[in-house]
Amino acid sequence: MSEMRVEGYDAFYGRSQALRDFSITVKGGEVLCLMGRNGAGKTTALKAIMGTVRPAAGRLWLDGEELTGLPASEIPRRGIGYVPQGRRLFSELSVAENLEIGLMTRHSGQESLDYALGLFPVLRERMKQRSGTLSGGEQTMLSMARALCVNPSVLMLDEPTEGLMPSAIASIREAVVKLRDDGVAILLVEQRVDAVLPIADRVAFMNHGEIKARFDIEEVRSDKSLLHQYVGVGA
Ligand code: ATP
Image 1 (cartoon, rainbow, N blue to C red):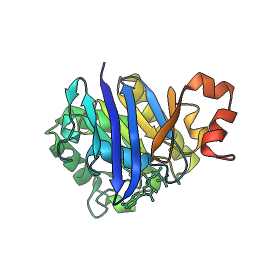
Image 2: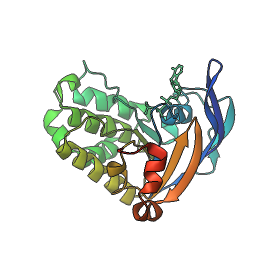
Image 3: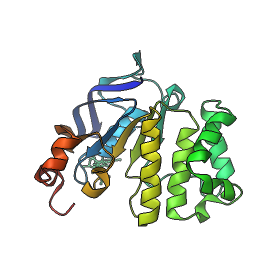
C-alpha cells in the first residue's frame, strides 16, 4: 500500500513563517482531511509538498523513496497528483487538450485516461469544449481527471467543492470515495465540517502553520464540538 510521509516542513514567505514543523502521513485507501481557518497554512502545506513553495526544512517520502528537494516538475511524475484551489485549468484549451497535458506529464497511456473518464463520464461528452466554458463542477472534475492522468498513488485536493452546487459536490465526493476505495491516498483540504464528516477517515487541524490536533473520524463524529473548537462555530 502506498504511503506519503512529510516530516518537519518549515516554510516562509519573506520573514513570515507559514509552516512550522508540519508533519503528516497519508496511506493508500484513506482520506485525511486537513482543516483550519483561512490563512492557517493548508494551501502552503500542499504547495510545499508539490515543490512550488520551497520548504526551508523538512523531508518528504513516497513509498519509502525520498523526494525531498526534487524540482516541482518532478513531483507529479513520482506519483503525487494535485488539484489546486481554483482548479488552474488552461481555460482557452479544450477538455481533451487539458487531459493531454496531464498524460504527457508522466507519459501515461490510454488506461489512465480511461480510468479518469470512467469516474467522470460527463467529460467524454465535452472533449472538444473549451474548458473555460464548462460549469464549475465540470471544471473541478476536469482538474481531478487531469491530476489522475499521472496515475497518482497520492491525490491532494485543495477545497475542491468550494462554490459548487449540491449535485456537483455529491459527484466530487463520490469520486473521492471511489479513489480511496481503489487504494489511492487522499489528502483533502476542506473548511466545511459537513463536507468532511461523510468521507474523512482522519482529520488534522492546522493553525498558524502548525498541526495542532489529529483525530480519527469517529472521535469527531461523536463530539462535534471538537471540530468547532478548531474551525470556528458555524463552519
Ligand atoms: P485559505 O483557506 O484562505 O486558502 P490556507 O489555510 O490555505 O488559507 P495559506 O494560503 O497557506 O492558508 O496561507 C498561510 C499564510 O501565508 C497566510 O498568512 C497567508 O497570508 C500567507 N501567504 C500565503 N501565500 C502567500 C504569498 N504568496 N506571499 C506571502 N504570504 C502568503
